[in-house]
View 1 (cartoon, helix red, strand yellow):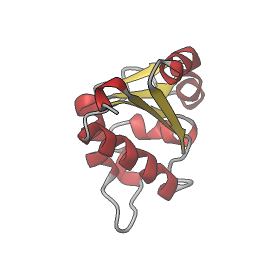
View 2 (cartoon, rainbow, N blue to C red):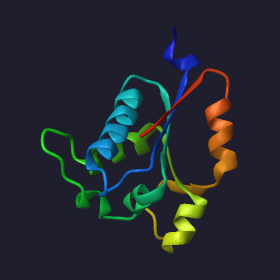
View 3 (cartoon, one colour):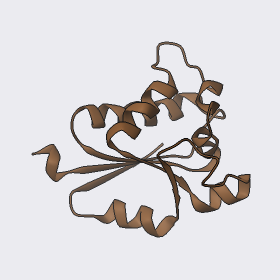
Length: 123
């Protein structure tokens, strides 16, 4: 199976409340990018805060790559999206997020997840 024919949509609802699950989502997304897979990482719920500059340093996990490094890998070749409703509930605006991060709604998530060859994972 060719990685060019496949895409991966990774959604994390976890942030500082569940650092291990959050780091797993970022790690899987960054690993897939490194393997040449088209990746879309979605930050929802408490993970929405991680779209703000400096907030990835709020989560530190032993024996795990820093979230900031993983985020940079994903942004380098993939897409990072904050859920619209999650952003609004937290007062997060498009101007406030890390450059390259977008804010989009569930219709975009569904479209990406149901695209031919797509695989969606939720953490």
